[in-house]
Image 1 (cartoon, rainbow, N blue to C red):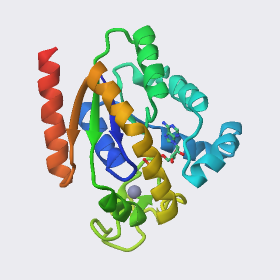
Image 2 (image 1 turned 135 degrees about the horizontal axis):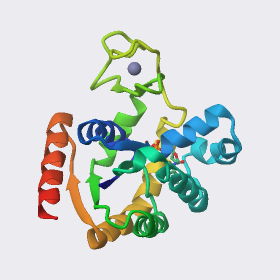
Image 3 (image 1 turned 90 degrees about the vertical axis):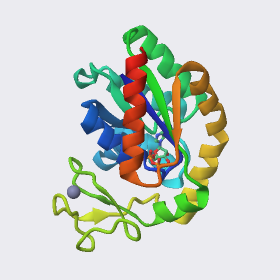
Length: 221
Ligand code: ADP
Ligand code: ZN
């Protein structure tokens, strides 16, 4: 099964995506994480995309689509994947549909939309800190979900960091870009796939509701 996580920055795509990935035993693929890793490693791709990410703009569709296709052809994706942060434009959604039709013709596809009011999003993002240990990647919030010890991950003890693009200016810009694309994108998934929309207020309840929906969806097919 291929699960697309739709939602503005800071709605919990990463947090919920990672939980679903464990529970459903599907790889979690985050375009943002892939891009940040390329920047940190200083690769050609990283150099090409750095300025887009720092300013909160979208990385161009052709670069993004190529990156995701390459990732989806890797071995661990055989059973499907949780796509977090992709697609973000209708062009990307169409490219994904064509790719899956060609390469994974029998796969089930479903989209989950996380819908959170903008004022709450800004608060979530500016207070967000993330575990620097890549294989952990736990996400905290200085106000709503602080770590037990400031700056240290509860789970693995690594240092917590703020993302460079998690400031008020950039998140406002990212939100604007999200809203420019989201109507068409959600319409695309309403027409083409099963779409489940939820306001994830409480994490546990949200995950539970999504998994219940996925169960029913699987049974119907
Ligand atoms: P958030 O959802 O909080 O914005 P992500 O980690 O998903 O964070 O994305 C960070 C940045 O990476 C985006 O602001 C954008 O520059 C780039 N990016 C990620 N996914 C895509 C995509 N599908 N298309 C274009 N740019 C992307
Ligand atoms: Zn950690």
